[in-house]
View 1 (cartoon, helix red, strand yellow):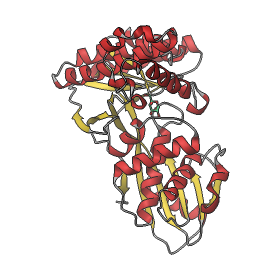
View 2 (cartoon, protein in one colour):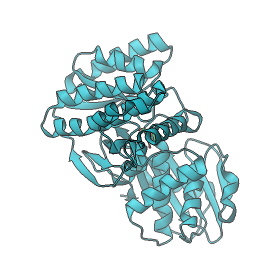
View 3 (tube, rainbow, N blue to C red):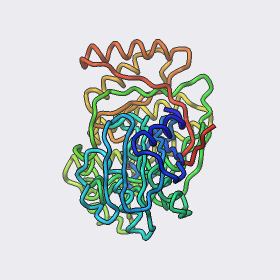
View 4 (tube, rainbow, N blue to C red):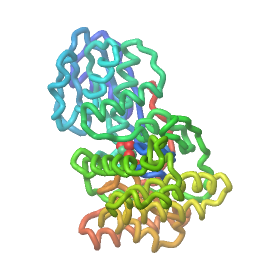
Length: 390
Ligand code: GLA
């Protein structure tokens, strides 16, 4: 839907008013490498997509919030003074969680009416939820004349997800959604929040996202269990490394020296994935900067194997896509992206082989799994911002 259509939809759903209608947009992301690293204090390498959540918003003079999405046919209504009542909403809880967090941080808000046009496929591992959170926060702060630093906005959105939605996510998705830059990936140190935009110069190579179409919600997945297993691993290792605040403060050789401290093999495997993946991020960014995309692709493959075997967050659908991808001509690397348990893979594919890739991988997937995968050739876009009608 374009912005004019979105404006008309807002008037159709909520009626006319004298308040100005404004528009904001924030994207989903694809993580190129560095999975399950953000909440362990290491480095990640995501990029913002052009697939985004766009909102049209208009103020009200009371404390009522109304939300509507173009792909759902109902209005969610909430009051600003009792936001804790709506935590179990199937849709609307990300937005209401953000409102709650903004108010708790002391920002005064008035009621409003919002229409969401969400183009990031829901539950696909491309951060549809972060896109919604970030666009909600940017829009609400702007219409209430609060001028807030984007990194602060990112932190408020993460807090909303922890406190309202109940997922102990890291900061990567919201950061990429807010701070992304067209044609660049974001190298983010999740401990210090230092970041750099790294140009994605991969001549003749496309980033292809393959969606398993297996839906999952992090709330129902083993995401929080992985988070606590990492905490457990860290607490054992602190016997030798008391200064370590996060698993990613340790190197792989330090882990090997102290591996006797972790007797549970699952916990040791989780720590091994995290520490090696963190090291892989640095090596792969170096490879990219040296123009060695082939080597970057190899690190992507290693990352997938580690997520499958050590971190155990892959699944038959993701593995089928990755295995089928690696059989194709012109593929430099392929891995699951995002939390796992379903969702998408990301592959680097030579441009002239992309059509064949989609055809062949689609066929193999359908035969093995029994339903279709969906493919997107990613464009890397900008982070969250206000947008204007032409
Ligand atoms: C989800 C979370 C992120 C991150 C990834 C895994 O997308 O929201 O914070 O932990 O999983 O890398």
